[in-house]
Image (tube, rainbow over all chains, first blue to last red):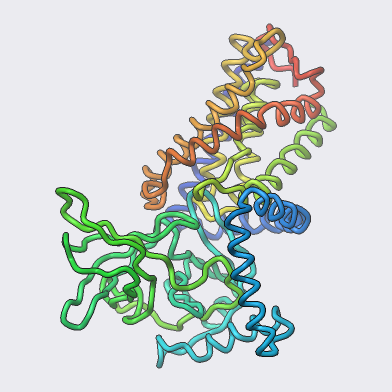
Length: 279
Length: 179
């Protein structure tokens, strides 16, 4: 009896392992993407409303405790915010939320970069961040012309790249995701440098690889896409601002960190650039 | 295992996954957040044996995978290994059952959660996913281990209620799962 039972256990465990492994393989190979996307959609459809409901209740509480723990920095921030609020009131800006949303869209309509590239404006519908990945969902998909690999920009600069699409929605991999690698250029016309910007993790600064040691890179330098690196992005999209640039002892490249120019914490609307990679 | 137990276990799994995807994901220390889902597989393995541990690890992992942008099925895969492994150990040794020292559960929760994250990261690297090698694994392991140790007992109690095990004390000295 016990042997029969343990045989059944081995079979069940084996089946579960094989199923999980097959799902990973499907998910990674691309050939079974439709199966894994369907399963993901079902799970998400069931659990997301519950997650949203719990978030609606717990987020204000969490923010309250976060505020209590970070009292000093919150106090400073409050002082700054009060000053800003005063300015805003002077300018007669009421109905802040609606106006900020409108401002985001207006900024997207008048981007100083990516001129000449047609765009689709989309609203962020969900933020999916884990210890290992950072993506957002947007409200436009294949039916609106959004395709795989297209760059996504926000009011400040590059936000990410489309990695999955459905008819009316798409997934954007944020530039902070560890899978992001962007060919970049920065510096002055006389001292132009190139490197590769890498995502590290959610809420962490970006890093830059392959910059020669002891290059002159002042703090605050803006880093742009260079149109190289397989031309995954068009040239001239602002990516981030240099936070620090040093050359560690005996290093063969500089250690550079960037803060993204687009405010990834408060994305309301984004523009998808209808631009495809150069073959 | 009867339908009532299945429903209760499902309820606990959904509750923990929802808490993970809503509350835990926002509790960040240096960019890393706790991961409760491993505790489900550990508790189920300890209480119900290898088969139950594997099943709970699989379904809780799959539920979380459907909410996260990481490779679909990877959390489920590690969950099965974890649940089956700890379940097998519990069946053979009576681990963490009656009469265990008070710190056994927190130690198991913290240690095995940390081990699971390392395994998850290792499998991700094997799959060629760049982000798994660029994260600060030490910080993630630290956060997951500490919160796992702190929350192992509540998750254990919830799973004990689900499987109908009195005071979390399962049939410890039998090698046969009771469900």
